[in-house]
Each structure stands twice: as C-alpha cells, then as structure tokens.
Amino acid sequence: MVYNNIPHQLARPPCDSANLAYSGAGNPTENAMTEEKRQSPEQALRDYERVGDAIRYLEDNIREQPTLSDVAAAVNMSEFHFQRLFRRWAGITPKRFLQYLTVGYAKEALDESRSVLDTAFEIGLSGPGRLHDLFVSCEAMTPGEYKEMGAGLIISYGFHSTCFGECLIFLTERGICGLAFVESNRDAALRNLGAQWSLATLRHEPGATAPYAEQIFGDGFAPGPALRLVLKGTNFQVRVWEALMRIPPGHVTTYQALGTYLGKPTASRAIGSAVGRNSISYLVPCHRVIHKSGLVTGYRWGHVRKRALLGWEAARHTEGVQTAA
Image 1 (cartoon, rainbow, N blue to C red):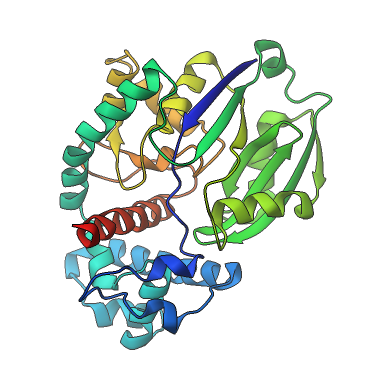
Image 2: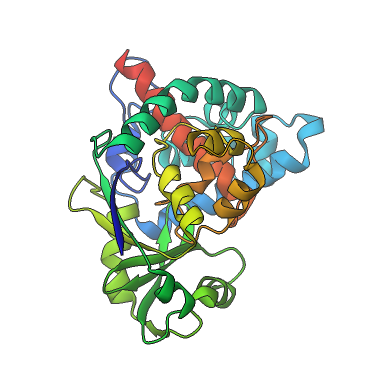
C-alpha cells in the first residue's frame, strides 16, 4: 500500500454562514450573516438547485444576453429574492458571481494560476511541505486489491444534502472510497459509483457517513485530522488524482499543463481519461481542470455543477484577496 499526505485545502462551503460576511467597507456581503444566521444543508441544497437553474437558463439564452431580472423570473423569483439567494449561497451578488462564469475570466484564471501551481507542484512533488491547512491522507489500493473489485469489502453509504447538490458517500474502515453528486436519481448514482466495487457488500448506513459529510460540507468546517481517502485506480490514474489535489481553490489548470507537471506533456488524452475516472469528487478536485480555451466542459457530475463549483470558488478566492488587499 502506498500512503501520501497531500497538502490540500477545501474552500469553506457556503453552508457555513461565517463565510457570508467578509470584512472591508463597501463589500456587498457585509450584512449577509445577520440576514441568514445559519443555513441548513437542506436550504443549501434548495439554493444550489435554483443556482443551477439560473446557470442553465443563461447557457440556453446566451445570445439574447438576458438581464438579471430575466434570469430571476426564469427561476420563479423576484429580483430582490434572487439577490438574497446568491448572497446566501455564494456570498456575493448574482451579477458579480456570473462574471466568474465567463470564458474571459477563465482565461485570466489560467494565467494567474500558472505561477501558483508551479510552486505547488514543486513543493508537492519534491517533499511533504505544508502548503495549505488541510491534509488529505491518500491510500492507493494494491494491484491485487484493484483486481478483486471489492471482494470481501464492506462499504457503508449514505446520501446527504450539500451546498452543491445531494451527494453520495462511500466509506470503508480505511477511509472514504467514493464521493459522488446525484445527477438524475439516487439509484443511478449508487449504481454508477458502485460499479468499480461490484463484489463489495454495500450497506445503507447514513449515520456512519454523516460525520464525513458534515466535515466536508457542513457548518463549522475547520482544519482538523486528515481525511483518509482510498484511491482505486492504476498507478498513472493515482498520480493524476494526487496531482489534482495540489490545485488550490480558486485556481484552475488545463489537461496539457497537468501533463507537463507530471512529466507527460504529450499525454493530454490519457490525463483527461484519468481525470474523468475520478470517483471522489470535490476532495479530488477534478472540476478545477478546464479546456485551454477557457471553456468549462467534461465533468462526470454535470457541467452545470462544475460551473457552479468553479464560480463559487473563484468568488471566495477573488473577493477574499480583494478584501485582504
């Protein structure tokens, strides 16, 4: 078995209302925490569904360049409540949030991220240097275990409401071996995530997985003991997934750049395939890899969710930087 301590930071989820108010005069979210004291996972899920609907509407009507009131009406909300929704979920106004979804911003983010990732990979691939606050401990399954398809393994699973939609967590005694977002229905999510563990025994035990959902997405998230991940893949896939965990929140990279960092500059197609095979979403942030043109495509759990994740992380990163300046 191979163990690696990956220095990796999760941006605080919007379920934590403390994130909704930044310091600094003139910040549009200054009063958000007093407006929304505590956001339950269920409320966060409902908010995300509205945000997803808004993103879909914008994609479908981009040529018409809809106004903010148009988008609000499309999701059956008044403009006032639409503003409150985004301040509660993203911590910023919808107009500001939507700026982070443009191709122009994505290209700027690629340029900005380059030097940050150069440092992250130089530190990460040469030693155990601490670059971020949270460590995720990764354990790669042995080739023998990989071939056994989970034979003799007991996996607890549970569905939980989160800030980015409903999620499904797979948990073994060794750690988290799967984290997926529910796209169509629970049965499909369970079937898809369980495919690589076809000989394992699956037990519906949401009580066992709930503390992990709370640690990852819930109120009061704080650096603590490392989250243990169990990675099931080829040696190359595991290297790619470990590399993904070097990408900080608010930053993005391309398949080509990821290949260069791994010493495989011409392996973009293989890199893309490995990224697409990732079965531990968010913790292994495959959503932070985009096309070199700036287009956001190719996400196992839906491109709308990928855009929502990237927009939310970009807002947290950029607004935080501007406030600290």
